[in-house]
Length: 81
Image 1 (cartoon, rainbow, N blue to C red):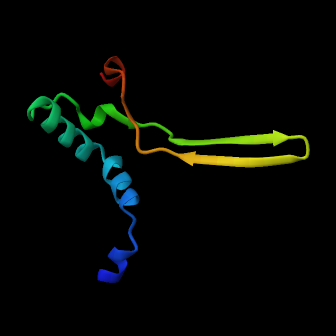
Image 2: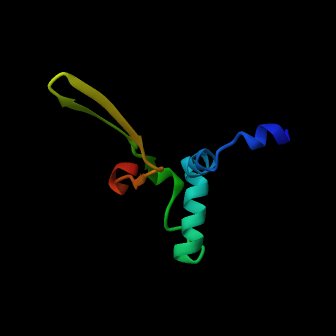
């Protein structure tokens, strides 16, 4: 088990943690709102964080890809009814 743990990257572990809406809501409610449940897990959704682009110059082209940390948005409350 220890060898498997060594291969885990901290960034991957954190991204997996933030992907869980319950954990995200719990932490931010505790820190920002003194434990009051203002942010509800069912109102959260992930936003695509992958970006890609192509650089071109005459006979040369290169693909550039980037990935950001997890981003969450709050769904519209009216559509939750």
